Length: 150
Image 1 (tube, one colour):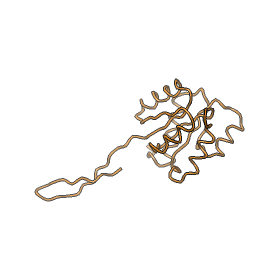
Image 2 (cartoon, one colour):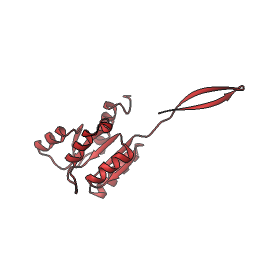
Image 3 (cartoon, rainbow, N blue to C red):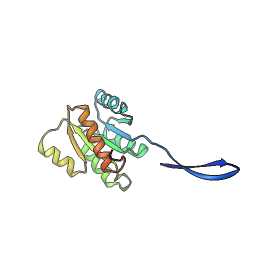
Image 4 (cartoon, rainbow, N blue to C red):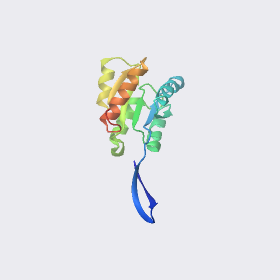
């Protein structure tokens, strides 16, 4: 994000562009509060700004409020499952750049296929290793242009 500021230098006003670093916003959607809190701790240690939602309807509301860069989405949730949340996000043009990572206990081939068919960018199974989650998040953020490859 660029901000312009005007600085006074020898009685002459000059425009100077200042680059500001904004944190990557990640929305974690899972109906298991303890699990969500665990993911939040892992992500905050790596300087991500983390938001939580506990069901599909709340997820859609939070997406419109915070416009996250990445969505970590469980499939088994009350009110609306993760597949439906993903489909609705993908139908909204202004959300097309949100990366979606499904993180779930579902392990059947059909679950993976349905996840990718509804628009998920990646699919990961619980339980998981935090290092793998962080690597996948980084790759997704590079792919959607939110961070640069280092």
